[in-house]
Length: 513
Image 1 (cartoon, helix red, strand yellow):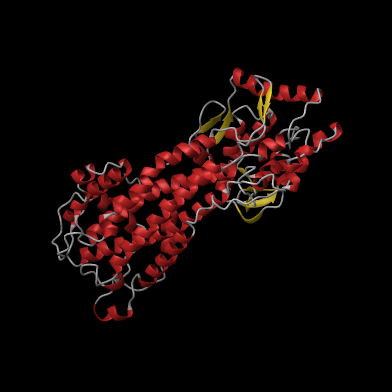
Image 2: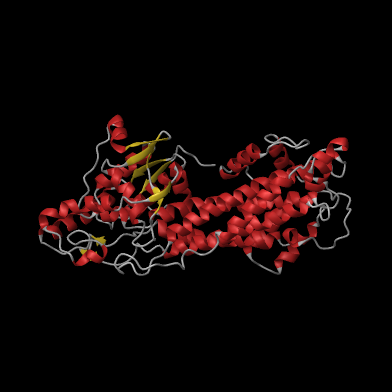
């Protein structure tokens, strides 16, 4: 679980996905106060100031933005340019990022600017620290970024808050920024000539969302494995499908890990069989091969996401040590786009796997003697009770929608901004798609966890299972679920149960493996 009391230090070394998640969950932040680091920040600012005095040409400082880079800015208007950048990009639409997501954006942008090559002042860095440590989150609409030049429009909402404009989320309410600043005695900063561009011209939104998506997907692999074990026991499945020797001949490390987790959950006395199937259907037999794809993808995704997180990704880069301005395209979010397009496919396949396991549990033609729809009713009450029938319909709908969203966003580049931004990443759309698929898959997972629990309880009630047939891992999980969920013996609305267990999954309720 996250330790919200920890302090995450920026500018002192590489940060991790977990550091960003910790900030989003309430951890505090601090800047590196080492004199060498402080001096590095100062050198970049001093170099920029000297260039301005010498009338040097710097993109986005003494020129217009994007296709307007050929427009020279009069010296007396240079100081106003960053303010205009923040304001004309204030056109985001769609739902707002959640408070958690917005705080992750703050931390991610701060990590990039803390690399010390963006030419920003200590005042700007410390203003972001102030927002984080006072639980102030910019209100950021989620739509409007094509992922290059970075997340311009959504990040304009972060920049605007630093100078006291637009709105923030504070104590669960959306309020004018200046009202909150006055309440907490926070002074708005004045953006220096390069700072508007430094704040906005980067990949912080897509990368922040990717950090949050990664952690949720990492946990889903564990929950899906636990559910698979429960379903295998409830279906009187074959444990030899997960044999160590079997998986030694196909050496994908993540797939082997999933199989090992399943073996640990199935190490118990086998119940009497009422099935003559030598091989279980694929959704059980091949579960390590499906969940294992996600598990094997995670290390690669971590590398991609954390490299982006710890990069300077604005333009131009200010090399204060060697007094150079480096013009390039580090704002391009292609790595996050590819990572999220990949992750969303792996996650949607988890939904599809669990949907098929649910179908087996529900159908009396395939479930080895369980009642149709897992109804818990008996005797004269049984005909009017329908158990998990509607929940399975919901699982089908959520799975179908998750699969629909797997279309890669990264291939939908559009030429925009007078054909200056003529090849863009769509990384933020990929990240948002991935989060949507995660929600849908968590819905499927919550439903399947409750269905697997219902199935095991029915087997126990009918004396087809007893405690000796359940491993310690399954017994612990079953007891935890039943402490929050009542066996369905009579039809009742299950929405509240589903929402509760979605939240338990999203907050990593169980220490599974």
